[in-house]
Length: 163
Image (cartoon, one colour):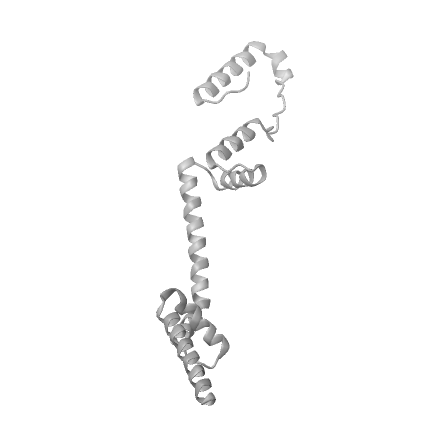
């Protein structure tokens, strides 16, 4: 009788475990992890739900990466259009946000533009052009007349000579 009780207790335990396994399998939250654990425990086990996901996972990862890149490109395009930024200004604004800890893009753009306006220019100063002294002294009225016409022409063209 003792053997019958032990066998009955083992049967009850097996039935409880079976019931628990059935409940885990029926629950949508626990079904996936349960099937993955079963496949890990016995890799030769055929589980279509797990096998199909594992078969397409590399392609899905590639698609996710492409999706992230496209979203980033779209966000950059929208920011460039919204704030009227060039590619270089966008890169500089991102650097300002990272380096200076600025979290708002409009603040970073304002800071970056203020810094750019305050930065020294790399333009070369044009050398002073002295008049042709030989012509100046030989025909001062003719030289003055030609210079006056040149200045008037430059003004008409919209250029400023600087004096």
